[in-house]
Image (cartoon, rainbow, N blue to C red; front, side, top):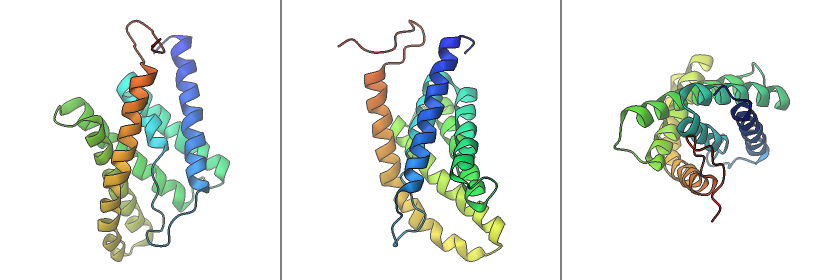
Length: 176
């Protein structure tokens, strides 16, 4: 990842992740599951993880969370720490499954990422609020992580198909 071209692509992907994060922040949440989101910015994180590796994916994730929270006005608030903890936990779990397990497809890895994101957020919420009752919300979030993880995984698969990031040949788009 030393070339200017790679850095430019990653910069554009950070910008895309920031836009998705802010867009999702602006969408209303349901009254049935307050705080539940699709995780649209995770599309970029997973795409970078599989095409550029662990360190680039981690950089994208951290830059997206910090810059988005600065733009939205949630930097160093509860929302920031929930996002950071969920994002980090999710990224580490997705990385572990991607690099060390061949049993899961990208959709499966995305589902694990969604579930672990929710788990990380509930753990952080417990630490911030010192209220163990927050754990009762976890089963609902874990159930919701299945369709959201599948949705994000399918989008990443479709993007993989159409973008065709070929790191060996430096071919950006499929001509077909």
